[in-house]
Image (cartoon, rainbow, N blue to C red; front, top):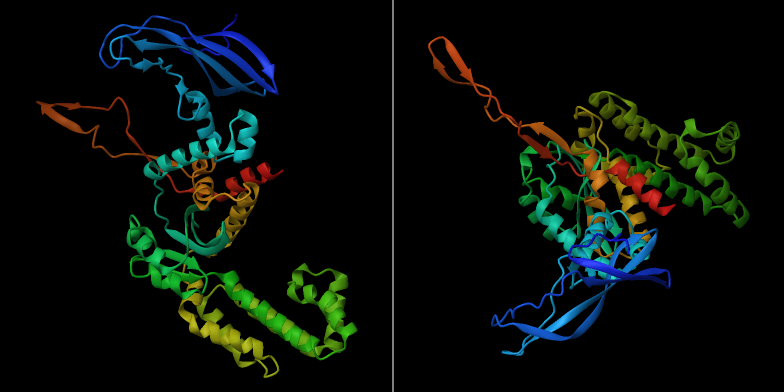
Length: 444
């Protein structure tokens, strides 16, 4: 029989197909009687034991090894012994090579898909993955971001804290919750905290209170999209207020026909929508006015200069009419966070949390595909994906001082050169665009 399995010290003796699986009978190549592991006396054969172990698939079919091993008993101390085979993992009832294959794929595919491919039950795959995740936790460390994004996300049964490396467009960490009891110890122990120069987040004050004492060089920039969204929310409040003043049929018309029109930006409107916007000024002038103030607020971010942007905001706030009280709340919020909002114009590049928001969506999709992963598994799948990590991994030549003059004799200098140039590898997290490709490929 041709040995397709290539297993050490084992020989296949039979193969058959059952229920979509290949069953391969395997016996040890040697049947030498061993010495007792307890007392060292010679043992004698005491029947045979058959156990099943999962192996790597062949021709798209799961493989089960039906391993037949001789049992031995010691005549002196009565110890029972079954010789071990180096390629088997008795704990997982699988071959080491299958376990390695699962480890290399468990963060790329769902556990159920791996179960179908390998014939392993989902719980076994999960246990292999958890062992692998623990190993990754102890060995993988990402470089601290220069530009850090912080956001919250409701997933896997709770409000989580997402941290990204905005400059590298990568995911840096996913914390179990967003409370200060978690965040303060996290930032206190953050490696190389002086590396962080900018932090982009929303207006939730506990974020700033948590990181600011421990990141000495960090300056907060409140995310642009959280700021301008306040104007859209104020417009919605004004629309609902005006809507309530009319009869049922007109209320439905406003809600169905005008809601999405007023939330759009002018440059995204087609000709028909632009005409409808003009008509809006005739029949609902208050709503048209609210739309124009929403747009004027958005346009503050079009200014390239901080002083010009602040002046534009002041003029916008000064011209707000009394008929639009919802926009007065926007003014109050901006003034409460004035320094952090207008820090947007201080940074050398325009910083936003767009990639962080994108990453939040990917986490939700990954969680849905996994049909309810635990937080630990979901976190590992997002952080430790090999392909996504590879994109942001960089190698640099270490300065070891080699290649310099080491000694001189007369006018002759002796220079030593290394045969291998030492390199230092740095990882910056899981590349978010690559994660997007992987997750949506898996979804389709």
